[in-house]
Length: 115
Image (cartoon, rainbow, N blue to C red; front, side, top):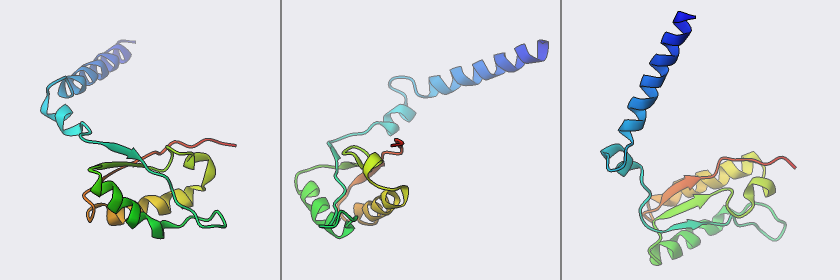
């Protein structure tokens, strides 16, 4: 029993230390903040409904032109129920391949529904 209490106390101290590292105004917290506009981007398809990442550079160029600096990929417009995991990975890889060219930060939705 005593070792369980010590383990719990140690875990609590670690949790408090971690929380303090991300306290309001801390450098760690400031580094993690998303700054600028975030666009929930769609995943383009062809006329058969298959993934078509060839259209992404055009979308990325337009977002850059509009001053968008962050994109949320893969779940914000229904992708988590409409595409397979492999297709979602392909879309993310395509965004990551062009992100630097258009000065975009890429954030990825990782949740999944089961239908």
